[in-house]
Length: 514
Image (cartoon, rainbow, N blue to C red; front, side, top):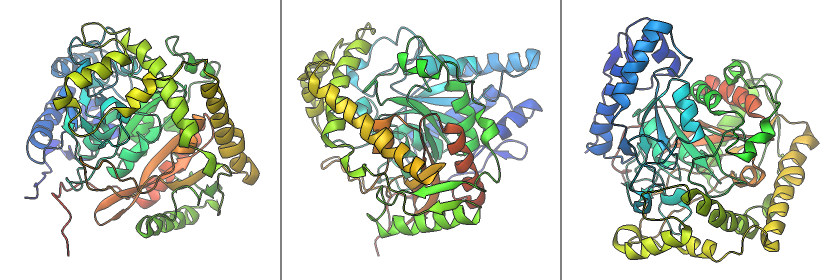
């Protein structure tokens, strides 16, 4: 049965579906809407679509204090005015972002259920300071999809299998599955995801939303369940580039709890909203990274052809091809070696900060999963956990060599090299292929992608809806050098403005076979 969505207004002339931050702020500013009402409507929609109806399972937990927080922010607005663009805006956090409240932070695993985290993650604290309402926690691929190579994106022991809101038996991709699916389904205004390699951009593409994967060090990872301190980053999912830019602005800054953010010291805070320039593609030089995701799917290539035509017609000069010269040397064993070593080191450090939960180390987590195999290991194993547990630490020459090689090949000999050679502002490539059918038995079926060079480099990506095939969305990625978020946002906003591809999902149960 196809679920019939509605267009109920939350204020005069303002439907909840596809409501942007700017329109929500305008309605709250002139008294047509309150944050309290907005939270109530999103919570009602979560109950109807996520718990019942299509049963998306994108939200793992709602904040029992969200209504009270919204009411306090409404009083503050009346008495002193709004703090900024996020005042009263409901935000979902991926369930690997610590919150010191009545919500859990579990990375989707029963092994971390128990007492809440002892402190807010820095990004959660910054959202609160900006006036956002932390609406709840989003489901995810358990442990950010680093437990097994045979996992199903969007499945967690605590949350079950998250579904794609366009076609319900299709994957939402991962690991920030619930964050992207919930935004796409209009269960929140915006959401927070995390990425190590593809975990913001792939679910953004599969679920037809905007995602920003920031430069490593632009946003703090303190209080976020980790995989890799050299690749992890925190960024927004939104339905528009403008909304994503507004959220990113609230997340950034130097944090003593995360040494990687020291690289941003002395850099003036970026006003990402200033990058929302209507003709931002005019005069831009954009390289087409043909070896990064093209050629794997005729359907995706056709969508990309239309996207490239739109870029050109909007005034961009395309350099085609402009391939990353080291593309075939990236990923693979070098990346795997780095991630395995850093995962053990970083996770053990994080777990040592948690109390009142069943595990305090990676070894404990492995043991917990064995002891709770019916709940945790029913569909796939934990071979990555076991491999990471066997690593020799961050002084291991194999790790140091892999880290240095990955940085060199992805940065100065990779992304920087092609941008410099052709005088480019950015590269473009397909973010990924259309969503595959969920397969808990066989695991994920990725067809194509372009995130690995940026992942190993620690460089940014902005991904934007580019088209549809068989009712499934496909995004285009704008890829740049370190700290180039203002440029990428400018290009992505102008592309979004001239194409207007995003459309609401229909919660179709399955694709009809001919």
